[in-house]
Amino acid sequence: MSRAAILLLVLSPLLAQDRPPAPAEARAIEVVLFEGDKAQVSCEAEVPGEEVVEVILPSLAVPESVSIVDDGRPVASFGVERDVMVSETARTPKNGATAEEPVVPRKRNVLRWRSAKKEPRKVAIAWLARGLGWSARYRLAVAPDGTLRLSLSAAVVNGDLPLPGVKLRFRYGPGGSSELDAASKGTRRELAWLAARYWTSQAPDAPVAPSYEIAVEGAHDVAPNGVTVLALWPEADLPVEAFACWASSIALSPAAVWRVENSRKEPLPRGHVDAYRDGALLGGDEMPFTPPGRHAFLTVVDAGEVAVEKRLDLIETKPLDDAHRDYKWHHVFRLVARNLGKAPAAVLVLDPSYKDPLALTRTPAPEVDDGRFQAWRLSIPASQEATIGLEFHSYHAYQK
Image (cartoon, rainbow, N blue to C red):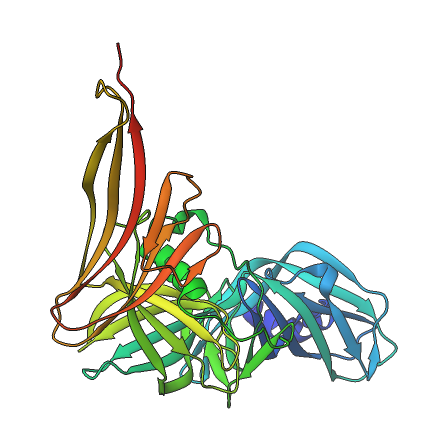
């Protein structure tokens, strides 16, 4: 061994004593995930007995949201230094363990505060994260007998924060708007939205808490820079009523609608639903926030066994003067729904409300007329049809 190597070996411990200790790393213990891209992260960090304590603050953390408990007492005064070059070991969660990568220098935000405690210890740190959150994903399996089985998973979106072996809680609430978004107008989603209002009257709204929570047992790995899917509720049967919905002024064909009752004790979070039959994807829809005992209306396919038709029939023409120059025409506008299947079909028909004084009668009379739509709930036997008619007059004057 050369003299230079021997000298370096001897001096290295002395040089290390003069070098300030590297900032400690905070390890996440528990994460409360909110819908979207927000989460509350609780961590702990092992710090040395130094007067000035430094802990790396992940890039997802909102500095203004940080709270620190050191030696059992909240830290009232601390600072955040941004973009500090820190040499650290990159850690990635894998199969319940942590895989370590070579040490690399990175820009980090560093928490810094003064402490009278001179012994190594653990400190608790909590902060709000942006770029870390969850959304609900449902799988709806359609059995041959028409029953539905629903399961729920959480899709956790994570920015660049490694989360090995953390406890997870998923928080959700009613939120959002009950109105139809512009992108859904003229689609099957609008038919399901209308069906929720006209198929049957919902029970009065029960009190709803501002938020609910799903806690999963055990510790879980959430990898950075991607999406981690975790099962929350196993597959279970749900009470369901199936019918076809046709709005004559919106869609050329009716949609198959499922009226799904939430028979669970907890509300269903809003989220995306993928429906399958015999393992094949039928289509997707959006589950609204649904309290226990309430109903969600979903649609993923057209009602293939129900055919519809709009038809205008002329009943008679009657001259209004002796010269036969002015005529009064008597029309019937018909909405026809045909059941092409081998079993009775339930059909909800919606047509705009008419305020025209020339309109005479509806046959049969609508069950609901709220000034926007008139609604009929029909039960059509196999291979039969049902007709709704609107009689009206029109006048045609002779033009010279």
